[in-house]
Length: 405
Image 1 (cartoon, helix red, strand yellow):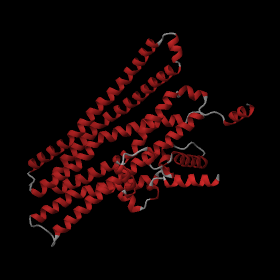
Image 2 (cartoon, rainbow, N blue to C red):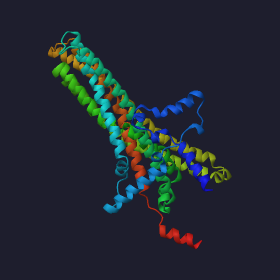
Image 3 (cartoon, rainbow, N blue to C red):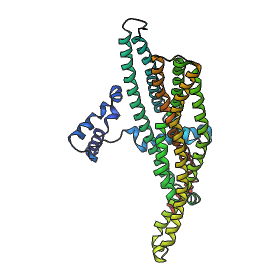
Image 4 (cartoon, rainbow, N blue to C red):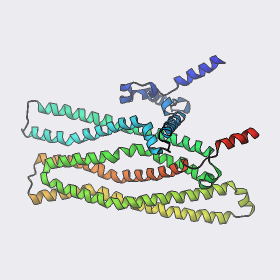
């Protein structure tokens, strides 16, 4: 029996993903994916071909780590700790490492226009030392290599972190649902709990991917404005004014989006609650021929949900239009200011400005998506936190009842 158990453990360990034991260079280059790629090249992948998760990525281990942090903080402060900061403390290292790659990506991307300006100066005979062109070419290759590497690592590590947080929350919701008191069950129906797992936990799991965008956007804009100032001088002020106006116009839109998202989730909860109750009591509905009446009720709830969904999507469309049009306004305002101030424009300035405009376009156009994800994650986290803070059954009472039976 012991040999059989040891054999099963050995088999399960050999089926664990190679990522769990991969070295530094294997993780950086994604070399650990090669065995799975070879199998996929030979035949279509099946369930048995997929490796098992590593110990750190499993929901049970993530939940255990979360509860250890929660209990440790609660014993030290004698108060209920924040769920958000507990999750952050559990994954502090992963957040910092992915943040490093996000910063590296922004810095290497921003180096492009600077190197381009130096290339143009070399072509115009304004080089500072011999073989400067070769040095710039090598530097450009290194920057692009680091940009690609950091972008891939940023995406992979934040997606992995999001899946860990999502599995942690799903396990926490499942455990909490087993201990809910009768009063809490009236406030949180089965349909709402299902919504917490399928919608809210999923949105919080998507948030880590966008988290670093909240600060890298500002860093990238500041670097781009500094490069623009070096290229066109005081005309950069017009670019800054256009960006500030665009951001100020986004603030009221973001507030209304937060309101509409909250109302949408409430309407979705009410509709799911009505549908789950209808399914549970389907025999009674059929017996008394109440199908048409309940159909009208659910359709009415769907209309309310559709109203808030359409309001949210319309504001999002206005938001996207404003942000996608902003880079064009930036370029037009900058060139107009250069004309009015009679700023001399040569090949070096113009090419640097055009290359730098890409640095402005990317963060400005990502602002609507960043705001949308932050709003959805904030609403989802508030809802899950309220559920996890709900009252529970008394453990002593349950033990007595079980002992009695």
